[in-house]
Length: 188
Length: 122
Image 1 (cartoon, each protein chain N blue to C red):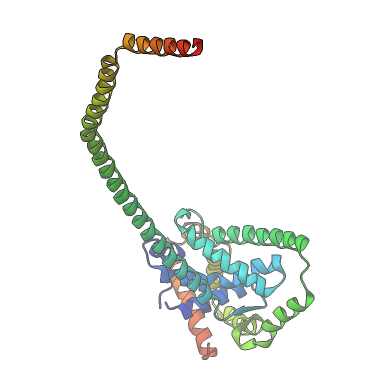
Image 2 (image 1 turned 180 degrees about the vertical axis):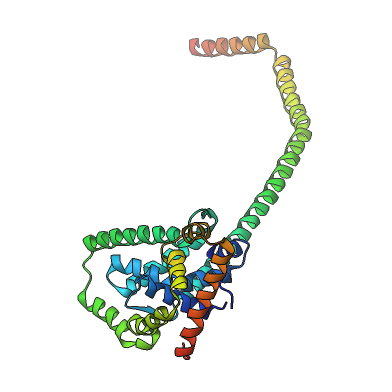
């Protein structure tokens, strides 16, 4: 099991390996859909906007500068796309009245098929103990790299450890989390 | 690392960062990838159509140039014949005018008029 860095995956995509892009989608779908959800206030719309975000990111992947993190870049796309969506929705509202009936039927689709969704409330209960079980140094590393968007160099300076050590520890932390999640959740 | 492992890791990151929606479609990534695949397919099709259009344009340009050049040659080969004919016609006209003596015509006219006057007097 080897989790590749985003930069490696992007380089693969740019060299023609489109399938690799799915790794990025799988990795960031939760955070991007949530960003869109904050604007749209509707999970179905949020997914539609997020789909557009990932598509736009793919189209403009060649313009990605490797000096920033992929998530920082796609987050900006998500915010802009969500704002555009809200603006266009408001314009549409001005032009036409949306019937309540159609909205209700749209909503009911999402409620009627719970098996088609990952419910995050359940996932949080499963994942939190895994994070708590992780050694503090590894937890700290994951937070710095994945959440606070630090680079290897920055983490190396912050923790006063060689870059190689940072890489190997991150690798270990990811693998531990994934394998533990698999153990407690065999059906996933 | 498979898709499933990235999926799990994505969920873990979302939970650690406390940045997750209430729920996500299980087929979300598939939908995104399908859109990308169809975009790539159309993009390739578009490129091949563009090449085809360029090739067709070049082909028709060559055909048009060839036709125009040949038409020009055809015109230049016909032009002396046409000019000879008009020249002939012009020559005939001139000859006819020359052959006709204008004095004779005036004389004829005068004699006719005189005859008419003589008849009136009688």
